[in-house]
Image 1 (cartoon, rainbow, N blue to C red):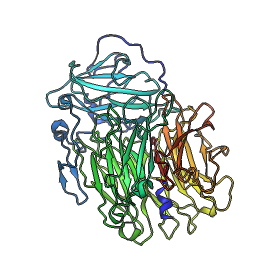
Image 2: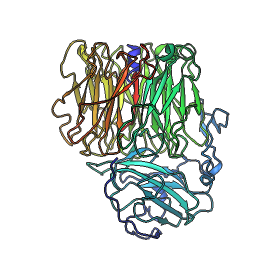
Image 3: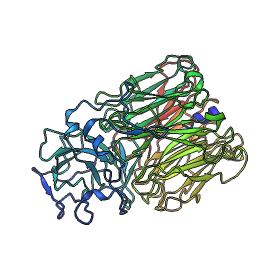
Image 4: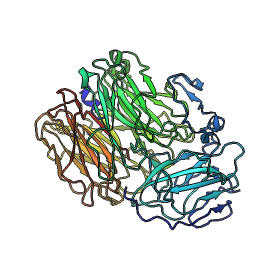
Length: 629
């Protein structure tokens, strides 16, 4: 069961009318297309994106170190023992080689590659010393040859603004200049605007794996069995014609050692170094007697680098299986860099642990926070066997985290929601327990952020329990303002109710596959050939009717179709999300299948990705990723 746990791992619409010149915003009133967010005396810094709630800003609350941000290129991070340090070791990352990063305002939120919940999202930044005015560009292309309206000058040391007109659906780029100095610019960031059902909460979450910043989602497929178990991972690029079937990047085990299982888990880490491009994290849980490692690869204008920029070594020692699960975590400390989490399910006699690492101009390879199993000090808990961003579960503007422990409480299983705040992650979690309360259910074997299934602006969570009644189940928990509820929102049971099924062994937010403004949910059952179901979001009465089954295109027993599932995002640039399914047991070393979305939901004629290694046992498709919601 433990190895099974490791498997659970935009057409743009019409834009604003463009005019020449700059609009001036001085905090005293609105101009067309722009408004300032002013707290009382006119300082826009005091409110974070939170749907109306006020809170400390990214600089005043101590969560973003203004001295580090301005511009030394070194962020203070805290290791697992609590010691603050500016880690400039040779295995850390250096800032992008653009001198403007030290003189232009630096973007803070929404994080690059994230999704926004409002079509008028609040943008925020920090100012370098001596700069009191900021010019903001909004565009529909990275080079900003297609601006959205006029550049806007924000004065009086304000560090945020929000549009007063809806942004176009799709990918939006933004960049900053000091005053009117357009020759000096910040890195260009991007976020995705969806056809929202509701804009009641202004926040952001998730990350799209757009490694070259062209506005098309890319995908990664792990093959942890390749080269006698050393492992590999392959990146495929999205484009206007859809997903390319030839890999753009091949990543191999840096140690080239059999049984390292490089690629056992893959995910976008978000933008860890603030250059505006999505970065990738790859787990390798078999390294050095299963001590485990994880590797960070940087995106950029030429695509993904194939040499790791940082190597993370399992702190828990041999047999810890550090890297069995990985995920982007959002911006845990409010400094404008993407952070990430790595699970180690077998630490301390399989009790388990999870480690949070902070992004920055220089990336520390020490964990900033270590999370241990809160409830079960015994063995076989497997805390950290699955980790995921929970999005913004309570809509306060701070990212939340969900961690599964499929063996907790005997073998019922548990899941834990860690809520972010102005002072960082609350390490006393909300505990989710197995609704069926039956031995062997493995509740928490798979966890995922589900996006916003009911359109209320709050992120939702899904937890898989693949052995309930020997058929499987998945459970949905709806986010809301209090962020403390453990009330079950929806129970999804194996539609065929067939003995031996493992419905819920894999779970993921599917994105918005039918373009109705509501996120959708995918549940996998890899038993036999394998199958999956996509549940469409509903403003009320979720989940509605049982969806049609998605079956293994290869139709062979043992294919393990849907053993891994993920949203592939908007790989062709339209408003419909695609879904990626791994089938690592398929003949020829494994396959992955991409099903495109459309107005009627997912189609049934997939794009097929075949194992480049073409060797039996490569387990290509053992892990997949495209985007979180």
